[in-house]
Image (cartoon, rainbow, N blue to C red; front, side):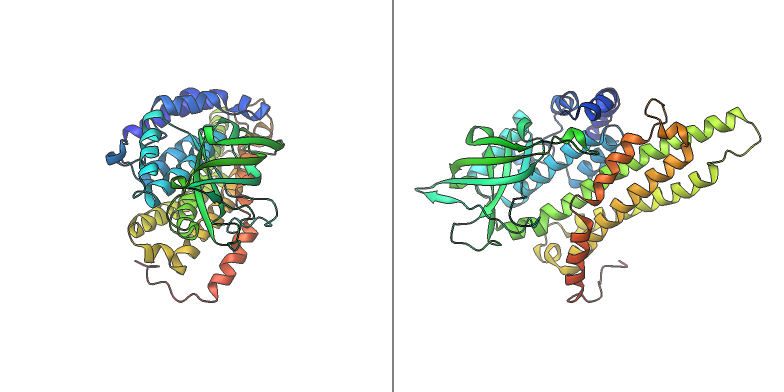
Length: 386
């Protein structure tokens, strides 16, 4: 076990799990768990050694998201979203002196990053922007109506998408790093949801200003295709796997309790448990396969931008988001009333509600529609069986 995973496990078992129910009940930010992640210096692990970080890899982040997902899905989602933003800066802003200094700060100060990619007026399409950078003498201003900025009031910086100029088309986007000192957030919508309540994903009017050097040099189209989307699908799938893993752990404990209560009689849920474990193993294999595929493609812009890669990563998200819900639902049936109750050690309620978020982040129907368009130009994938 890596030292980072060991540290994450300590945060998960000793802090996140203890506060998870209260975080969910009050829809509050998991401040204790995030403080634990900062104390153990887990926020900056992707920052390269040359910039003051330990230079961990995506596999380390995936493992941490899986671990945290077993204890508090909101904490895991915040950590996952943060690392998606860090990965974009690490991969696409290495030649920019402002960004490199910021990476150093990220590692030394354990800054928490959020994102503002969704926007009112574009129908949920994050590859289109209404707002634009207005540049004057090397500085920019922008105003964005963001229906969702997860943990926006608790972060240290936000990565914001916008049109390159006021005259640019909606799809000609850049992504800019805006530290807390350079922004103003005016809350427009609250966050009272079925699950993932601790992410505090309210809507805001975001006003920002800063230096043009804060803009990530690469076009957002490249950042999105090569880094943001594959990293997003990997880390989200990992935390959903964590939720499913915890649901199976609770249902297994319930079946064992029933077996001890009536020796020699197979518990009612034993067969269903065995089948659900097949689904859990399939979900894990799907994640590991695509993690290895992404690791093999890192360093090759052509492979990361290829249609088969995009479809494969989309399919990872579709498959894991659906399997997570299915597995947790099976756990509910295995535990029966004990799983249905909120005051039971076998309670599945929070896990089920958190898992339901998987199919709407980003909406599976939108991803299927995107895959349908991509499939028209798709040929056989030479990497499918390699």
